[in-house]
Image (tube, rainbow, N blue to C red; front, side, top):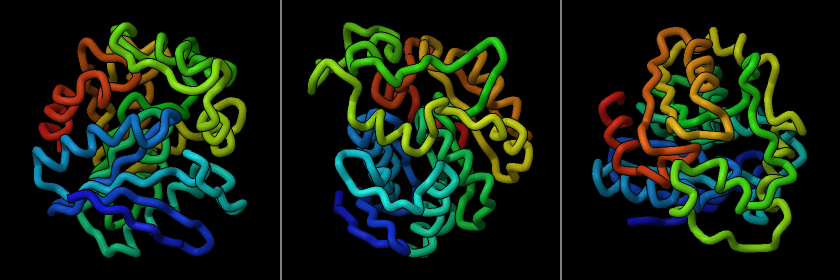
Length: 248
């Protein structure tokens, strides 16, 4: 059963899709918004009978974003507060793209409620020779061409030809560079198990970028997903689920 939680954490209003089963997972979407993670949330809940939380990042999908959410770490603290509010333990955090960055920041916070984190084609670190593709001025159709192993299978873009409003919300957290030059060094302080999973055909952040992300985290596992791009949870959800369940 899927329900919607409407919570206020401090001054932060938060909308969370809650697939309430047993073992808890916190799923964090990227710049494409909740629709890029909702199908995988259903699959994870149905296959594992787990409790799966999928919040909308404040500022996305037209939701309000309080001024106190000035950056990615602030958002990570909000989600740790969500786990506290719901009194959850043994939580596995799974984040894609920008959500992978948030998942890494949650791991850095060291909450005893978090058991492990899975970073799926995450962004945020700076890797010499392997820069992130600048998506700020791109249309949804152009981003899809870079994000999919087989772009012909991408859903038909909706909205106008300009940048997605959610991309502008994304920049509100990340800044124009969509990266934090301190993140790679800080990841050396992560104490929980982290698994980095990457679609082999990602042209937003390539495989070498993913390997560098994993190498920055002590003991992290790196797994490549074949026939998948920047959004394995959309393009190859069953394969991603198999990887996640094997790792977790």
